[in-house]
Length: 414
Image (cartoon, rainbow, N blue to C red; front, side, top):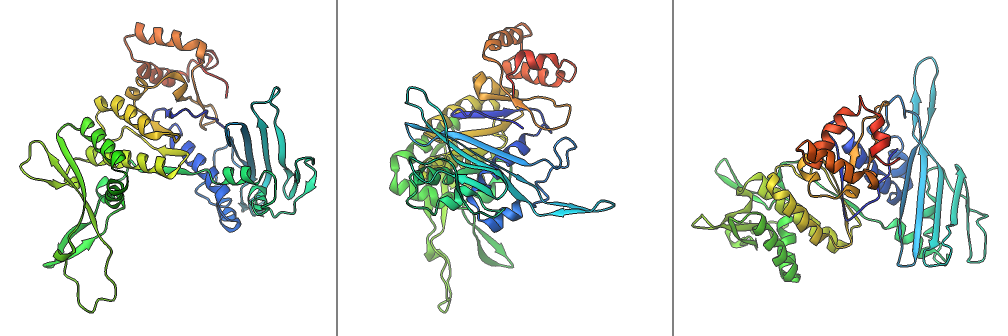
């Protein structure tokens, strides 16, 4: 089990095979479970790709909790747990579908003299749920429910419920991932391919049409985005999303369906004598444009949390500080959580932004931050060894197997 207090930008920092990807997958899974329908939740509780075979946690329930603010006055805590599907074969057969076992929603007015949480939903034994029906009521009204239903979703149908807006706000939390690991060429606009002497249009992702629309509808943000890219890659002079001229594409007169407008991204580099397509640039350049465009889109779409694996992938180390600063400027109210195994990134983040992957005797993830009272000491130790904070932390992570007393000395409790 691990918990993360999100800052604007937060990193899970650890060497390979420390559970960073599993942690990100668990966070995404937890939010998706809330948003999905009962049939999908039942499938998720039996998804063998998610069921742990770790000896320490196999057979234990999945537990998820989120804390946040609904508005300037109201804080909330919402959580649930469920048992995974079982299908043990052999001498002792055991088979059962997954089922939700606990659920709760608590809120408080943080501006009151004595802020105290009030329980609005309380599920303690599978299908037994209590909730508060009115502002003057108690959390004692029964809510009939199935084992694959969340009370939060069922109560969202009660339009007159006095905390209906709270329920809808929690249900509508948006989490989105940005792929930085796949080949970025497929993220860009269509390619005209020639096969057997004939042209065919290969459709790409929506990056080019989104940039074209952004340029038309919010030119200021578009220009800020282009400026950010040209600052990171000075050789680029201009970036221009365009509509491919359909007059150049042959369409049969009897074609029953005509493809919609197709888009591309054209770039002019300082040392070239003509414009080219952006996808002819380096892998790192394509990933930078994709990453920053997706950050801008997430902020404009009202996404609360962005998940990015290996932010530094294919990006030169000297660009990382500028990249983090630019991302921070574009995020707005959106939070970014990313994984990394690069000591370089730690140089540009404060201690509360760094969650360090600690070795576990039981083989599952344990991410913690440095104690505030120990940051100065750790920095002095790193400087004495002529290391950056990131380099020292990585050395520390690898040595903690032998020096486990340092975990309690330097790191917060989980």
